[in-house]
Image 1: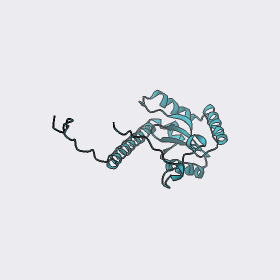
Image 2: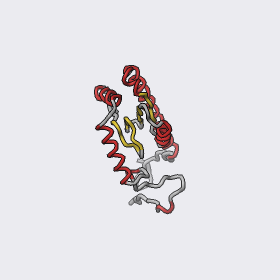
Image 3: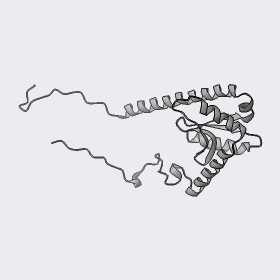
Image 4: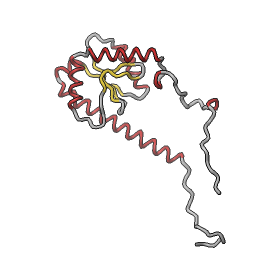
Length: 181
């Protein structure tokens, strides 16, 4: 009879320094539930009272056939609310409105990019006046993200193949008497 292999889990106290700890707050982010609920409520309000630029871009996204990719309007990503987010691509679109705090927006973009979300900034006047020029830019950015995801997936697979031990060479089958079959 063969020995059975069992899954051995490491003790959490033995966790190495390079592995991130599991966050137990904020659906995977280090955010309190109270803060997260406030963010979601604020995003709902923003969806109810959207600017003309948001409405125009949302209408175009609704009409477009983007395949498996969808953009959610005023989405909560971590501790930020982005104007449009495609979670599958790890991409966010931020519309620059008149009177917006640019320093705060840049800080938010930097924190989102630190966790792997690419942020694309578009001026509201470009959407309202030249939306047909904006859409190809969004499509190009989406294609770049798809290519980035493919490269990352291929690198991950290649890394996994290098870490696995090489399979043993096939041995000849023998019968109980020790002779070849």
